[in-house]
Image (cartoon, rainbow, N blue to C red; front, top):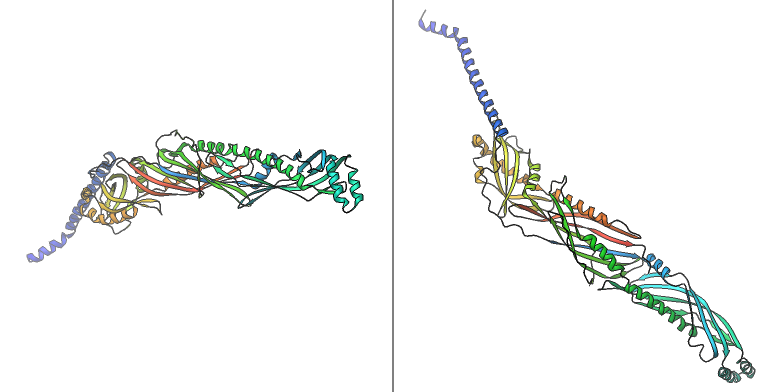
Length: 539
């Protein structure tokens, strides 16, 4: 047999042996690779577990920023106080006397001698009507006029002379009664109308500006057959009594300290600090300080239902770390202004340390995986997040776990990325968004063993961060709204005949500032407050 043929036979006979040897070598290589991969992975796990990466490692140096200056905002509470006309009517009913009595100082001209002219009157229900030009108070009056005495001699001579021209018998008859005693009565009917144009004064008082008018029906009294009109004799007497009552009422009203007393009570209630943040909000415990500084009011407006005073309070507001007891001197004068727009505006500068902001940021980013693209060479999972500031930019440092997708083994590594961005407040969505993102130079070699695969993932990462590098500030807004609403609930406690309606309708974040340690969020709460008075204290 030729040697070539023998070699061929031997080759084919030993093929299984060779194949077995190659399989063994392949398995050995695969096994060794698996052991290496397991060892490598275990080593990385152990390093992560027992020697966690420092998130500040190789972080860019941050230039120190000057501390934020204390910021105090101006807030307003402007409330219409509507006093219903029925409340005014009830108070006047209790205060106004029901009976009026008096004697005339000018007894029926010269017709009577040794005369006594007296009147007793009683008033009916008081009606109160509101008009643009004032408050109209009216009541009917009814009573009696009593005339006692005797006809004067000169009246008899005069009357006889006059009547003699027409009928000498009447003249003689009149002359015969000049020495007789008379006791005459006549019913009197009329109406009293008082117009008030109330005005506030800087001295915390109300000037009623009342004026009265008396109208008497044309009744008549008969003396010896002669008709004497009652109104001219009665009206001066009623005018005098009504004017005396108006003067007394005006004096009580203009000296009544009810407006000042009520405002002092509300002033003291407003001057305080109340808890803010803390609890489960993710925010530190803070205090909202309210310090009223100025009081103003517009002149009363009158309509068909009520007399409305619009009273306003201007306060300084700030958020502080500890409870304070502000000093709020009550203003000596009330500022009278042409008009005030009712409403509630509370401005809140909230200073939050970056250590607390980091908790919010990490809660929002921890566990997130980027990018959301199955074709990306590397998947990155956020483990930790920190925030810093330098100049006009913020620095987000992310401790991430990166895992490559291109090899069979899916190697992973822990790295720290540093991303710069300019903060912009998205007022519509109430979030702090970072724009103009750039990866810090210190992050270029962060992934170590992943090398080129990790570098290829950077563009994906930047795009993902552009969408997700945000700080949700709605917890700030929600907590602020809740706490202010809780404070307003105390003012809603109704008193006798008083109902207070107060509510926070919205709270929006309007601005941000920061220094090296603190993020300041400026918020503004808006709402409404009104007071309805259906019962007045006794005048």
